[in-house]
Each structure stands twice: as structure tokens, then as C-alpha cells.
Image (tube, rainbow, N blue to C red; front, side, top):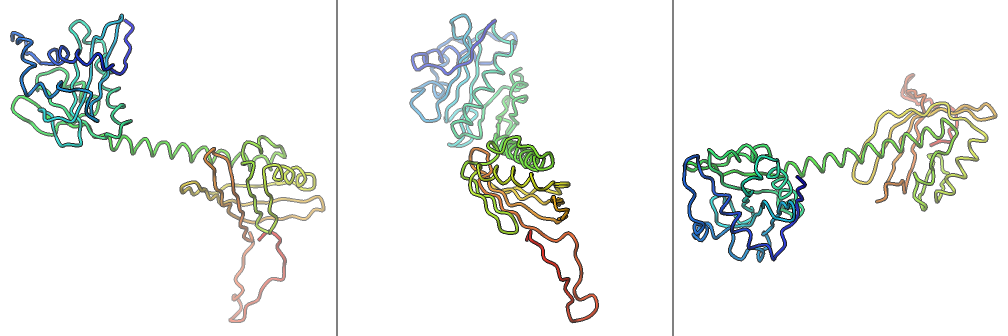
Length: 311
């Protein structure tokens, strides 16, 4: 059976009367009430003027050109009401279409629709003996209160949204780390594998000892020219730090030039990313790999007489 989940059209709002009636839980052996039961004030809150309030949302399940189920919500004084900021839900399927997972799809879709519209909590009321209780529990609803034969349940999506944000942030950080490793590998392999994609067209790159390159084109020129007279032997990453649109990477570096001059030092790169995920600014800071205590022999410092061009 091909079932489509979609938003309910305004001209279909009248169908909610039947779906509200079908949502009434009847224990086995109990005779169904008259359809006029939905005219009671405590049930009319689900229907009256639906679509006119900001919190009114409804999804339907459609099969073979007919609406066979509905899940809707609104902020109302119903049995599941918690506060004036939390929509209450109702869900219903026509007989013959239950047990096929359609209700799960409807409920999941409605919860996502609520999140898209800025609602992070939803409530409902369900009879304790209603098999739908298991569906609500699977979808993250928890019992908030017990009222006679019913449970009042709440779905708090705040943690879900926070977890999604955390997951997205983690993914972005891993993508940035992969790009940094790609940049370091270019130097080790002496091969441009995507400088134009890695750096923004107007990127600024500052080396620790002074040179400054503006634009991805100039960065590529420097890369190609430098590798014609030198070789990077080691560029090891030690750790990353991320905050907002910036990354700091700590590393150690060693290279040998064609005149056999060897340079080795430790450093960090301060990197800023643009909205497209490219490096728009990178500044390096270097530190001598060989360190010493100038006061090792007394109160008068003794400094090594050497010149380093990389800091």
C-alpha cells in the first residue's frame, strides 16, 4: 500500500470531525457512542475554528486518493493541556489502516513539523489501556501525570534539538580537521590537491616569520615556488581547538632546503573559516624546537647566539 504523508489542505479541515471520532478509545466490548459525541464542548476544542490559530498544524495520510489518517495539534484546553506554549496532539486512523506503521509516520512527521515551527514540547492524553500508548513511548513521550484512567504525556524535544546541534557542530569540526590534514599533506607530497577549493579567493595567509600572501592564487604561487627549492620532511599535527568559525591547530615541522639548511620548529596555526567552509585567514606562530634555560648557570642570563627566521 502506497501511503503519502502531507499537510492537510484547508478545504479538508472538515475531515477532522470523523478522525476525532475515530480517535476515541473504546475498550473491547464497549458500544461506540453516537457521532454527535464530538459536539461536546470538551471535544470541540480539537475542531472549532481549526486552522485559524498560530499553533494549528495537521498532517494527513493519503492512500489511493483518500485521506485515511490524521495527526493534528493546537494549543487548547484539552485533557493533555500543560500550558499556553505547548501544543496538544491528537492522532487517528480509519479502521482497516491500523497496524501498518502509518501512525508512527504521522506522529513523527508532526513532531518534526512542530520543531520547524519553533515548538520544542508537545503533550497529549491517552487511556492507560490504549495500545497507542506504546507508540507514544517509542516516539519519546513520557508520563507526566496520572489522571484516573488516563496518562498525561509530554514529549520534550529540547534535548533532541541540542543533540542535533552538537552532532552538526562535531561534523563541521571533523570536516575542518580533514581540510587541515589535506593542506599539510600537500606539502609532504609536494602536490596541489585542491588549494583553490581549500582557500577562499580572498584568503590571507601569514607565515610566522613575516611573509604574507593575499588570495588563493598567490598562495598557490608560493606553494609551487617554495617546493622547487625545499622539501617538507615532517609536519605532524598534535591537537586541534575549535571555537565558532575558528580553529587552532598545534603542530611540529621540519624541512630541508636545496642548500642543505635544515629548519625544525613547533608552532600553531590560527585559522578562520568562511560560510562556505573555506579558509579565509591563516596565521602561523612558531617556537624553537630546541629550548634551554638561560639562567641555568646563575642570575645572569646566557642566551644562544642564533637567528631564527620563522618567528
